[in-house]
Length: 331
Image 1 (cartoon, one colour):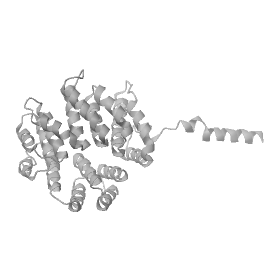
Image 2: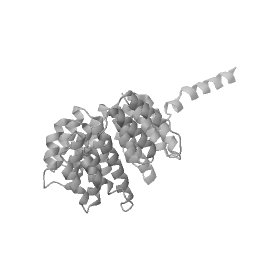
Image 3: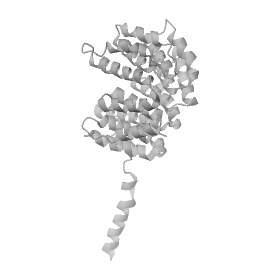
Image 4: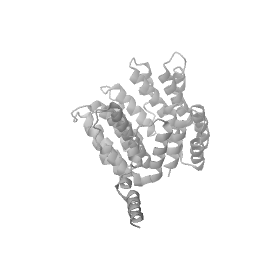
């Protein structure tokens, strides 16, 4: 009997003791090395299924310091933080705004600056707008020790994503300022497009002739966001074999956006689903298309995301995962 009691106690300890308590959570698994994309997909899905319960740990992950001599570990940890920001954005997690604000204002890392601004904009709401407005003003007045221009660009992009029309006067002033950085002006034109104002069409078109590749790319993307069909001809000229691959893809996505802008929501859903099936490996189009379906938020859009999330054909993994993420977080 004594040996039976001893074994029973050991089993109870194994099942209820520190080993179980310290089992790695789904959020912490984001930092693990993966050999297959499907492994990361399963972790992502676990977190999404937890819903708002996962928010506190996702915020804690953003606050973790990355301390390692192993560059692969550093890369994985940063990738986990970006994933956390993406999930928090999809959850519209307003509790994350103060941490994201700190990252946007105090980090000197450009990836951190742009990703945090994007997350703040996607979370949206009045507090998000106030953060982006403050950073935009402070960066424009050179109040940060470093990277004022990058913070300003990031804030401009975030203001468009935030979809608060109070940003329109700021963006128009920035776009029309001849002394402003050219990319800032084009970003402002694109953000105005997100807010339903197409007055930046001329600024965006002018950037296509720039010798600066970053300016040209910003212009291509802004024209898609603005959605004016007069830009189709110029964008089509960038889709030929003489254009670099990145410009061809970006121009194609912008043309799809412009075509979609002319349609009713019902037709948009069918068109976006059709084009996503034709372009399951174009990340930029996948991001835009699945987010657009989520924003349309009709029964047809929900069904489209569900159907896309069930695609198991080779080459459809990125599209499948994005559709699943947007579908599961659609409210």
